[in-house]
Image (cartoon, rainbow, N blue to C red; front, side, top):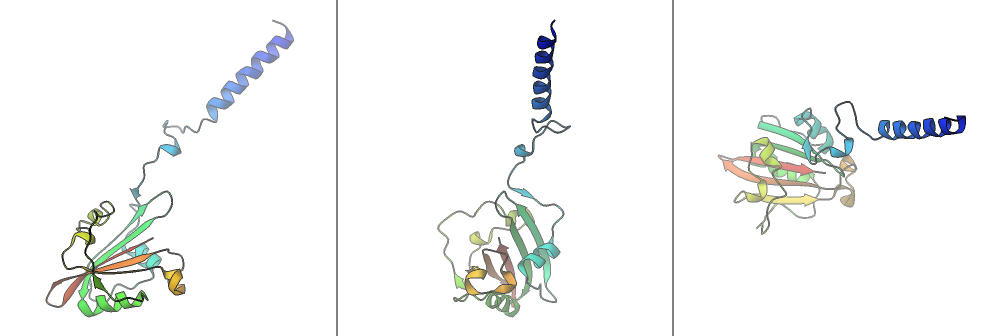
Length: 169
């Protein structure tokens, strides 16, 4: 084999080796593009969701649950707890919506099983749940400027108590 042919052979071999090494496969053979969406951030809970939403779980609230659904474009933050109806109303007012909580007849299916991840029914399916949603940047809420949307559902449960469902992205 001449030097020129030998050089071509090794150049071609180097290209093949480089393409194989740069294919994006890791040691386990999976590629980053194979990651499934959506998925749940197993390390996130109530504290992370409260910090993102900039809300306070009222003192004496029970059954507090939080989760973060990781998506390619924007993550969805979920929070639920049971508190007094007064606290639930105050929280809804704190979102600075131009409208008060209102009954919401839902003529569509929920957006997947988000609250089901927390062991709860989807708030859109709960009879009697009242709803309000707001775009924080649109109403000048600097406390929540890093989110595009936040909504709350309030469901009366019993004896002056209400379950609060909050969802933000």
